[in-house]
Length: 201
Ligand code: SF4
Image (cartoon, rainbow, N blue to C red; front, side, top):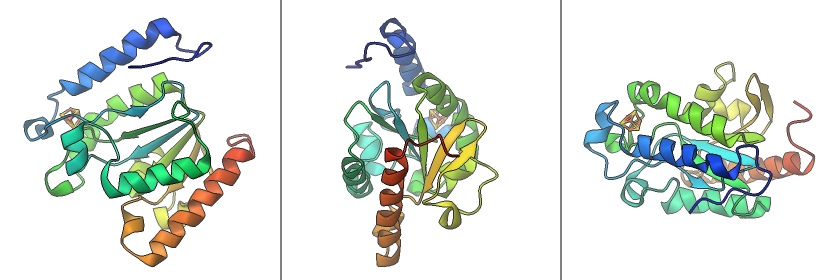
């Protein structure tokens, strides 16, 4: 299931530690969300990604499939990834919170309980670039950032490396204005990646 390209810093042998982390999350009972989940939603993508997209929490389709960013907002994200020209091993997708919050309401206590998993996943994957999707992911990875509508579309330097904030793809489904904003920010991300993202922030 997991293919680690030759030369990856983690080494093919260490894929066992990724599997162990995945299983740990799938069995986690650290917060009450485990009682109502169908699946913990851990990750999809390659194990040596250039770019990792960080969302907020799974919704209904994700809870049923066990995969992040399915349904309409997932299709919008995948269309953007296609436009960026990222191959299947070159990107990854995950969430701050691994289990679906009831009524899809953001749950700060679950976010705090779940945060170490995100940090461990990012430390293992070591992406060159992290792309936050929505306000909560931005606040979690860059507490100093301005509000998401102000920050989205421009790269930022952080202690943990380069970060590119975007609005959440679900927001882009809500209005023409936000859909246009999403498209512009995808283009800006593409230009930044082509220019050697991370060297200029
Ligand atoms: S949301 Fe995170 S901390 Fe809570 S049960 Fe799921 S995996 Fe564990």
